[in-house]
Each structure stands twice: as structure tokens, then as C-alpha cells.
Image (cartoon, rainbow over all chains, first blue to last red; front, top):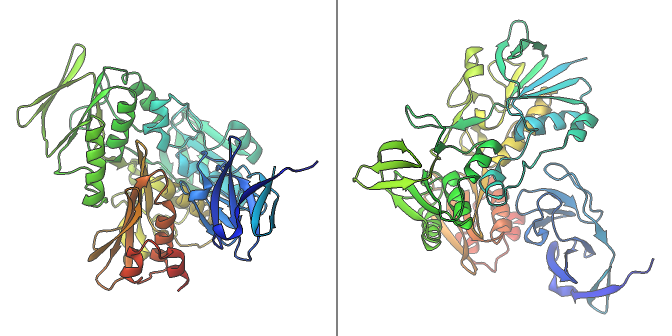
Length: 104
Length: 407
């Protein structure tokens, strides 16, 4: 399978240990920058009640939904307990020439 | 093999049941609830269930209970706890033995003295209540709401959205006087007014009469409000009768210690029905009616039924959605000596409440969508860590609260 790389933003537009929302082709994603300065991407909406995760808080490798505090590991998409029980889908990310790309 | 019984199949009881399995409990789990639905989340009842007619948002579907080996007895009521025999007696005549018992019996709407719900008078607690209320919320209908708390205001917003006209009657001088700062309550009240809700504060009801086709409220100032439906949203009463009859200590809720144990070590209680000491607030005894508290205490009760010995030390937290606005509050603001405001733009702001020593004890915020969520969550962590943040840093939106937590 070959991913199509879509340009997201400049790498420094996301703070360390933070997240932004990225909308593309009618879909919404969350793009993360970890405390170790690696970049990651997941579906943008929480699997519990379709809330934008980019409004939530990143702590270490965890994104927490702003509405009901459902937690996911944004590197793997794994749901970390109630109220979320369905994992998040993750997407490949690369940084080239200071620009972040998501593989769709 | 141990038998664990959970009385009350709401958010709290259901979360406790699953948490027991997640923690490796291999005995029997029986979850008993008087409603006929499987356990569901109640927050949507004043919102999606009314506006969209959505079905109950289940905590889990039947397959998940089956897979986890949790027996759900729906439409069953526990009549009695036999503490000596360690059994509960059900309304169908059966008795269930328990080694550990969890009471998650919740709360029920407070009613007007001498006035039951029925006919054109309703309260909102269950999905069936929501279905019944929704049938009245049609274009051109008029609904009267008694009580300017979260239920009343969320219901008013949903009724407006459906094209009903709304009169909201609050006895106190302002809406949300319990736990919400006046500055934020004023924004909510004026938004309701802008949406066409008639908000009558400081209004006392002198009489209520059901007449053919309408319910008529007479206020003390002589004003008459005629509506097709009256919804009473004047608070909730904890369901403590079962515990009381069994001789357990009750103090504005089933009284539990920090481990959620009642005065009987084999019986725990959690959620809306419970009062418990809050370590962050000088062990002050509180009873919280909130979704997150129900969930967290359910999970903690499960851990402690298994001997976890984990004390409850959460920061109270709740939210309310009205129109496109969300309000979030963390902590308990009463006792605050100073308030600091932080503006986030587009009308969104937070209020930080500090005690006389400068310790952060609460934060309240309102804004569109989830504009305040991240900062409230960080405030909650600052509160839990008993921090004394610099007020100037709190007020400056360019200061990331995360840096205060790391400091």
C-alpha cells in the first residue's frame, strides 16, 4: 500500500507536548508533537462522543478528550480506559524540510 | 468463589462492574437496576435525547456484559439488605448472597410538596422521563420549567432548539446559585434571554393547577404562567432508604469514608447516593451529583471491594452544555478569598478561585465548544497538587498553565 503524503503545517507550528487539529478532504485529524520531539497523527474525533481531541490536553504520550477525559496513547491509538473503549486510528507522519506530512 | 452484588445500574454501578473484571476479579457479579434499559449515561437526557430523540447511550451493550460475565438484572428492585445473613432480597422474592455489596443507588428528583409527577407535571432523571418530555416539546408549545439549575437550563436550551417557548422560574435572585460564579451565571442567563427564554428570577410559586389542556402556575406576585407542560428541576434527593433500613450511617447521602466503605466494611457505596470526605478541602463531607464522580467512584469502589485500600482524592469536576456554550468547573469555589480572570478570546474566559493563602481551590470557565477545557483540566491538576500559582501568570493567556504545573 502506498500512502499519499499530505502537507499539514510547519513543524514549529505545533508546540512540544501539544496537538493541533488538521482538516483534510472532509476528514478531521489530530497531529501531535511529543515531549521527545516526535510527530504523530490520529483520527481527530474521540471514539466516545465525537469530540475534537485537538481541544484536549497532551500529557506525555497521552491525549485526553476535553469533554469526558477519555484517554488514548496517541502513538498507538490505544484507548486507556473508561469512558473510551474503542481505539483511535493512527496514521504515519513524516517531517521533511521543517514541514509535517500525514500519510493517508 | 466470591459473590459481588451491585445495587443500582447507572453509570456508577456499571463502571464498577466492568472495573472489577478489569482488575481480575473472577467471582460472580450481579448488577441490579430498577429501570428496564441497560445502564446508560444520563448527561444526554437533557440534550441529545430531547433534541434528537436519541435512544439511551448505553455504557455498554448486552454483548459486553455477557463477555465480561456480568449478570444484569433489569427492572428489579432490591427491597432489603440482610446484613447478618449477607443477602439482598429482591422484589421478585429471590434472595442473592453477597460477600461484598456496592450501593450505587443514585438519586431521584426532588418533588414539590404534595405534588407527584404525572399528567402535565414532569421531572427529568430517566430516559423514559426524557421521552415523555420530548413529546411535549413541539413548535409552538409552551413549557414552564421550575428551577434554574443545570437540568432546568439545559432543558430550556433544548426546548428552545425544538421551537417551544419556555418560561423558566427560579426562586433565588439568579440562576445557578449553587456552585457557579455570578459572572458566569449572568452570561448563561443573558444567552437564554437572547434565545427567547423568559427567565424569571426571585419568583416564588404560590399555586399549581392542572386544567384541561394546560398546567397553570400562579406566582406570588400574582402573575400567571400557563404551559402545556411543567418540568420540575429543583434538585435531587439521594436514594438512601435501603441503607438506612439496614442501619447504615446516613449523612446527606450514605456516609462513607475515604475508601468508600459504609459503616459495614462489607458494604461500599459510590456515586450520587454517597456523601464522603474531600481531603483537598479539609475532609469536608460532600455529596456530588456528577457524571465523572459516578464513574470515578464506581471504579474506585471496585478496587476497594478487592481490598485495594485506595482513598478517594479527586477534584470535583462537572460541565454543562447549553446552546453552543460549554461551562466547566473544577474544585469547590466557596471559601475563595480572591478571583483571577483569564480571557481566552472570542468571549471565552476562566475564573481562578484562590483561598486566603493563595492556594488554587477552584476554576470555572465558559466559552464556545471546548474552548476552556484544556485550561480547566490543567487547573484541576494544579488544584490536586495544592499549588499556589502566581495570580499574574494565571491571568495572562500567553502563560501556558502547563508551565505552572511543572514549576
